[in-house]
Amino acid sequence: MTKDNKTFEDRLDRLKAIVSALEKGDLPLEEGVALFKEGQTISKECAAQLEKARNEVKIVTGGEVEDFDVDTEEDTADDS
Image 1: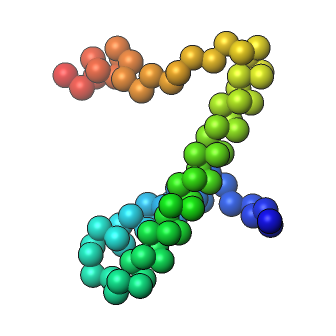
Image 2: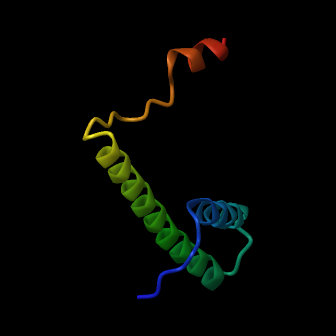
């Protein structure tokens, strides 16, 4: 298995491009299926990168990792 040098952001950008192309709905079936498969692979790679990063943070903080909360009180107050 070869290891590539793509960053998480590179993979995420490619995944966004795939989703955009699939959402248009004008691809030939074979191309759509190929893009879907590529997207699935990239999604798994991103999930693995996130898990690795989470584990690294957990090691650095001595196991004191809390779930990231996207909706903080500050965020919801700004939406008003």
